[in-house]
Structure formats: C-alpha cells, structure tokens
Image (cartoon, helix red, strand yellow):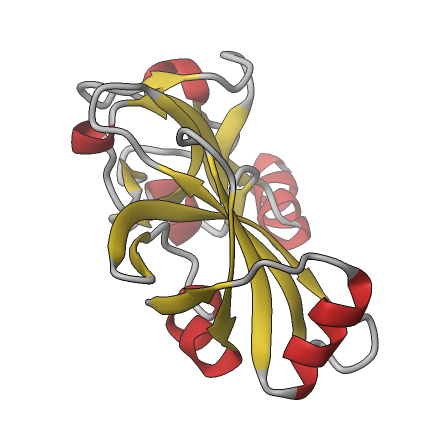
Length: 186
C-alpha cells in the first residue's frame, strides 16, 4: 500500500482528502505517529476478507510493516472515513485477533445437530513471526452437546487471551434431533 504523508490533520483537511478519493490514516506504535493518506480503492483487498493481513506501507519512501487496527465508515454510504494502522515490530509481541476456521465433518452434525461458531476470532499475543493467518480447529470428533473451548486450542508461539472456559465452536441439538431422540425413547 502506498501513501503520502500529510501535515495538516484537521477536519477541513480530512474532508478535502475524502473529496479527492483519499482516506486519512494514522500509523502508530513506532517512535512517533505518522499521518498519511491512501487511495480508497487500495483498501478493498484489506476490508473484504476475514483474514488478518500484514500490510507493507510505503509512505514518502519509507517502508513500514503494519496491520489494520481500526477503521471508521460513513454511517450512510459505507465509505471509508479513517483508518488506523499499528506498526509491527519483529522483537515486540503484539495483541491481535486471529480468525478461526473449522475443518472436518462432525459426527454430531451428521446425526442432526447444528454447528455453532461462538467465537469467529480469538484474541492472541504473539511475535510477528509466529502469527498465523487463521487458527484451524478440527470438529470431526464432536458429538451433539460437545464443543471446543479456548483452553483446548494450542498453537506454538501464541498465548490465547480469551477466557479459557469459553466455547469457540459447539454442536448443539436441533429441534428435529431432540424430537428424533424422544421418538426413539418411546
């Protein structure tokens, strides 16, 4: 992503940038904050994906490795109004949310249960070199009423920060599966 630094950071200047099709941005987490602007079209690959992407920012000839930390949208038009980037350091651990993906075919789902994803992202602390694009959970052994808790996930180099007893995914009973179980008892 390529951007140009901006010296004026007021409301009027930000509005003028938006009229030109640019998005005012801030890069923080390094030695000092850097205010810059980027073309709105450059955000498309970052916004329309559930994955976490590190971004190589080029601002006035300097390169920075960063991650999109926060983004603000216009409440009616959904245009990007402002973006915050967090500068990454190879030696300093960072806290970020990593998406969760499931693999396999659960026995409980095949028996009529419903797979419920309770956490779509898991909060982790890790060094940049240890960050995966997503965390994969195998749901094959799950029966109806079972789930995978945060404490059951282990990825080398990651420290999970969410509550340890929270279900990430679970297989719940549906009305049809409960009815079938009741009919089998009769």
